[in-house]
Amino acid sequence: MRCDVNDVRIAYDDAGSGRPVVLIHGFPLSRRMWRPQLSALQEHFRVIAPDLRGHGESTVPPGPYSMDAMAGDIAALLDRLSVQRAVLVGLSMGGYVSLAFCRLWPQRVSALVLADTKAVPDTPEGKQARDSMISLVQEKGMEAIEEVMLPRLLAPATLRTKPDVAAEVSAMIRGTHPEGAIGALQGMRDRPDSTEVLRSLTCPVLCICGEEDVLSPPSAAQEMAALARSGRVEVVPSAGHLPNLENPNAFNSALLAFLSGCAL
Ligand code: MLT
Image (cartoon, rainbow, N blue to C red; front, side, top):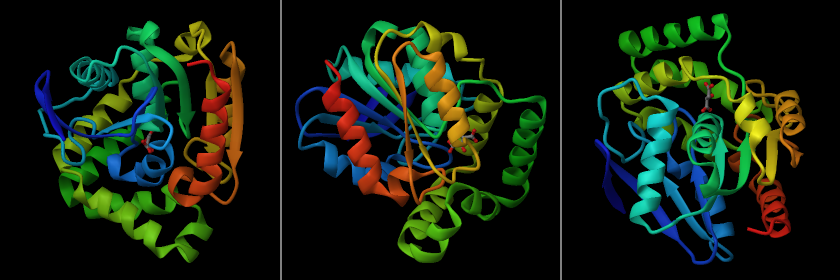
């Protein structure tokens, strides 16, 4: 499905019925990464999974893409779908976008799932690494990004034993438009600190993380859960930065257990 909001055409899935759950993907990926969750959740919930601006099948407006702009696209999409409140599930960059959404529209969030992400901004070294990635995209394209990122996104065992998962992630990275990737890298580099947002939230918060995530490790999940008023942590075994794809059964069980325990 497609919907024109702000200056972009957003592609999205909208499946199932019941209380709405919005799945927000990471960088440089697309809503395809949520396939195992779409099938597991739609039996119980209305599941909405957008491609963020510049990613997947959404259009690629000029960057930079601030986390607020991407959150604004989601808010506008939810308006068009007549959804007032929803559970937000954001993985990595999707988590940064979810936290921006919570700062802008806290009353629209019934529960928050932060997967493999962090509330703190980039360090000065992190910002430099973003600029190096931007140069890499400009000079060598998305294949070079795939080479750098694939071993960071997936646990070594996933790379060895789950070639289908690695192929799916590679295809998403290669399918991302270079201008879209650059817009997102600029937005992530310049994103603000969200620790106060997390501290101020009154809704239930689940911080879930792959056991072997080297980009946003379990310690980041512990720190975020400690900031939230009602935060809890789940660590997914046998998974790196993309536990929803690397160990979908464990990820889905933790997610469903959390959602069923929330008065949404
Ligand atoms: C992601 O998976 O969205 C990215 O790794 C986030 C980041 O680079 O900070």
